Length: 388
Image 1 (cartoon, one colour):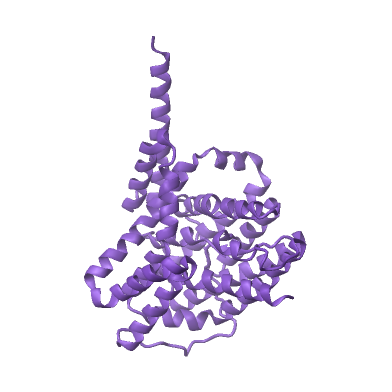
Image 2: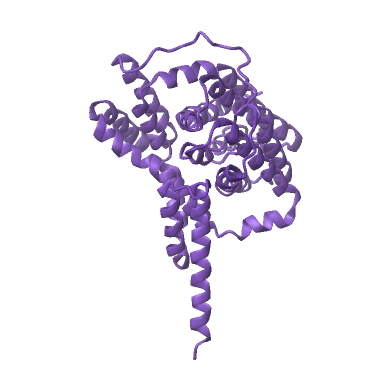
């Protein structure tokens, strides 16, 4: 295997892991996962996408790069009143729904019927509170947070891909150098850090968390991932990829993990001419990528212990910085269609409010309100057109 392939896979894995690990840990904390369950969560999703990337790349001879669902983690982190067992049930339901999308054409058509603007608005509403936390944390502890934000802004001008990694590195340094970090406990290190999590299938959590998780993973992760492959001259194995990531996510959920899916941004690192001049040989980068994620899965207990020891303000700030680019993309897509702007804003506002009605989370109600507003506007438009 060429050194360029190994290098590209290593960079993609480190960026994918380091830029959003704080968000995944925030998601685990939101559903009350213990330290052992959190470590299992991280390890299971790492192992799942490592195996999925290697198997799909080998089978299809296409460089397939998988990632954990970053907007999905943000959605989970914004959830209240859900424990890890109910969350695991929702994760299994979301994974099975992804797999069923590959098998049941009417289901795929129903997802396609949801306007892209409303799906993007729902995602923007999920992400907005995390980005607002940057300002809140800066006001609360400016001496600690401002250097992190400053480094992010400067590095972003040079290389956006490394900006969050740089912010995380500065945050870790400030936390431990300044004495703000708690004790790092490595005593529970396990060479195979997996713990079974008994799923609890609650209908309200499946509707309020599992369904939105399925929608944001499909609309904001898998579809862009397929588009990146096509833009680089590859025909993605759509059905095989959805089956693999869906069933793999359902299996990983038994160990507490949320969904994984096609990568988009990190995938672009592994698809260029600099990876291998022969396009037909680039699929091997998926093997190297999978290998690095296996290593990251085994190293998970060490990383989790360090991040959990950091002050919560630093973790919240880094998570918010990691989501600024996805928020910009989602907001732009939400408001791109003039006729959909009011329904999109309604979706964004309700989702960002964090309300829970009948035990069902805000993301579901935001999408429901947006679809209702869009239907009303379309009906009013038809009535106006029919009048003399």
